[in-house]
Image 1 (cartoon, one colour):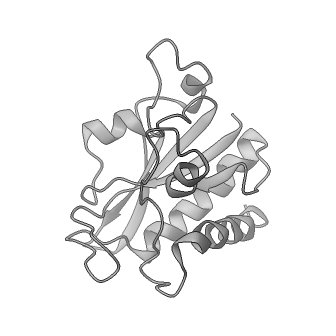
Image 2: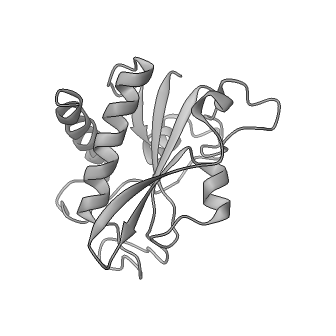
Length: 167
């Protein structure tokens, strides 16, 4: 595996069957006890080493091969920072995602950099010829509203690095 691409599902806090097909790992949220959890998707990361057989997690148009897809569950109805919909992403989900990405970087010997750990939003900006162009995930962190969309990826990588040193 050569990289990790970070998403939100644009769904509810619980991964559904379609989301389980498209991502390797999903970060759900249980509002009853305000906790986050990791749910494995149907495909293993290694399934994305060869995307020509049709048995892979199709999470990033134009960028699936060799990529691990991780998504935070939520943001159904998201329009913008002031209208986040019924399932706004929670800080505890982000923290669980940072730690999970750090663990995956260790497991697969992925060096944390802008070229190897990034958001779907960043991928779309770097590859406007793909179906990922214009994807908003993740370009906003609810608990850090002053971070601009173009700085979100750097913020995430810094948090992943922090966890990487501790896992």
